Length: 302
Ligand code: GUN
Image (cartoon, rainbow, N blue to C red; front, side, top):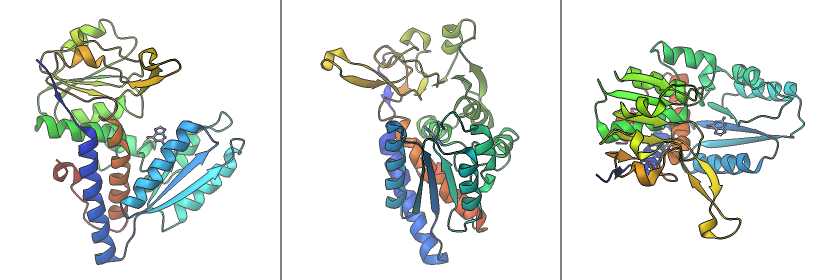
């Protein structure tokens, strides 16, 4: 079997176009422009690239983008003061503090300081709790994007065996909650799980979010399964020349794509969905704050 490739880039392009349409409608009908504030502390090159890309796509969707940069040495109090200002600013509907933060800053305190209604990353404990109890939450962007791709690929997920490899607050745990909401039978596996290959082999849906390059091999996969690879790992690529690198996922794509029914590539799979879902969350937060009906993006982008 050769797996169908799940084209996350094309899906994300459609989703962003759909969001841009809804943003334009908000402006003409209600005079509202959604605003997203992104805060970067320090000058980590990878984070700077992410932040620039977020700002560009925010503007392309017709939203207002506010970028705030603090020095790498900034005290936590300065960041908390900025968050308080953004919480109170009616032009700001979404706040994202780029992670990781420098060592002198306590990330948990910072994330809890963001107003849950503006927490478009969905990392606040209130949003995590709302998701876990099946209430209206803001859902973390990467798992939301994975769910959209799965729904688009498989339709109804009810009754399927889902295995999530990885238990982070950002991907693994919220992913498991979302799959449970879809009536999957969910297992969260991790580095201490016994017989990880055997657990993975049970999965109709396998979500890999461990951050280990090409760890999941083709013979860990049930024939015909849908495989969602969240990993983005930069590894040496001597075949391309000295000092060259390439991006690979947590799944060994060559062997896995010979067994799976459908699989996301890296790059071009889950990655592009994350920023598209950040824009979707900003639009959702704007609608909720203004008491307007929420766009049903999950179904419509498919
Ligand atoms: N750093 C890398 N990815 C992310 C993300 O999705 N959100 C935040 N806040 N920081 C990140």
